[in-house]
Image 1 (cartoon, rainbow, N blue to C red):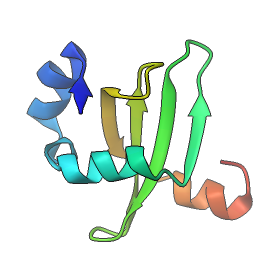
Image 2 (cartoon, helix red, strand yellow; image 1 turned 30 degrees about the horizontal axis):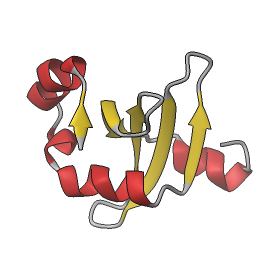
Image 3 (spheres, rainbow, N blue to C red; image 1 turned 180 degrees about the vertical axis):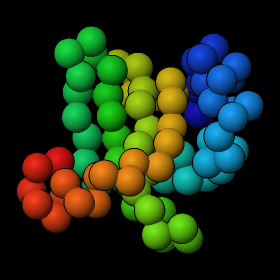
Image 4 (cartoon, rainbow, N blue to C red; image 1 turned 90 degrees about the vertical axis):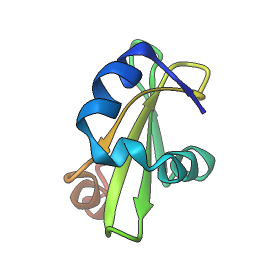
Length: 84
């Protein structure tokens, strides 16, 4: 898994979910949804059963370099409504 300087400096320091690289890699391998942003970055969502939450992983255009990762508390509600 490749990581950006932002991920290394900010995310790893402040977010415990970022320290679960196996979760991040699982989301990237098999996302339940993806969305390309206007700037080319890609959002990937995956369900993490161990914590019963959806994780969002944002990558560069290469789909490998991780910029940020966090639990997306709104994704489950949007997915149920069909607006993800």
